Image (cartoon, rainbow, N blue to C red; front, top):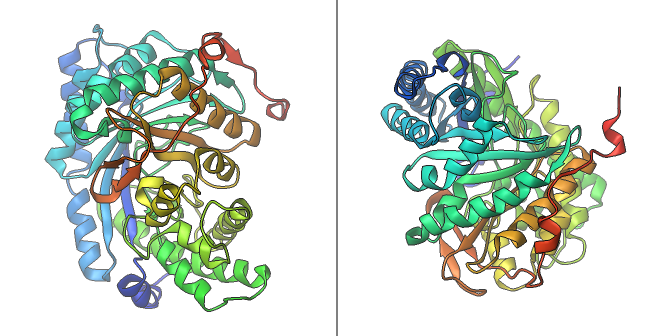
Length: 452
């Protein structure tokens, strides 16, 4: 049984090793807010979010004070807006993004996710309107996050949507050029997106979720890094066991916080996402964990094997600590948000090709990558297609969060601040992918999709 004794055992982790609850995210269904009139629909969305999440921030802060556990972010995810807004007679969904932003500010959350569309097999009229609204929506809001799912193991890859998203990312960068294309940091393109992800920018409240639910995202790369120092030179069996035991303690803390927040808010507890989510702070890096295993620098030969073991051990330890592990759950490799990754990328050792290989064995994918501002939409689409193919064939979630930084070239740096950190601009291939992307259509689902 979970009790406060488990909390006290983590004091050193919290005070010395950057352990925190990265987010408590309230998922809210907006399906009953649909209405043909835009104003009425937006009003109903605003009213429901502010009513349901009225106490979310206060409860999070109370738990922080009582348990001594930092809860870095309080967030909201909502039903993909493409589903809710499709009944409205309007050509632009920007008003819905503005409504989400206004509601997020009213209740005090850091971000709100769900300006999203699920188009893995094709676009409806509403899906298309939402996607085309993304650049303006992210340019005129502060806390709204957007995601588009373009592929799945069951459906294959919607290459028409992939081509469109390359253009959308370029437009988003242009409209937020004054902030180095910051809007793109709030836009994720998925394959096999999950419905209960508490992490931004990809969170949305799936159609299979309850009316309202609370999901927790834990973190703790610094804790794992410190634990591995005690087994320096030991066999990988010992390394894996050490990671498992550490992940167990981290996840247990998330379970306690989730249950307590759920009780106080009067909403069901959903899942613990036990992903190792780094920050730009020194000592809170996934790259440094890999280097502690014996790699001189993250990105050299051996990196993929080390990351595979880390990801697997984290999952094995976490599932023993919670009945409901979900979301993405693994190890994140966002370049701009990990000081070790930044250093490796700046040295030229960590490349896009290596990051793509690492995607095969960890959570998400090419995350928070900055590329030259003159990178073409087709090249961006091809990068998305590569990542989606990895997710589709391997039955895992992959994603791209890429920033074609306006006016920037290889060697420059994009500064985003806070948890988003800073990203060195990385090179991409200059050869054309126009003929490849212009084919359109769908890449068929792989044979392993036929499981019935």
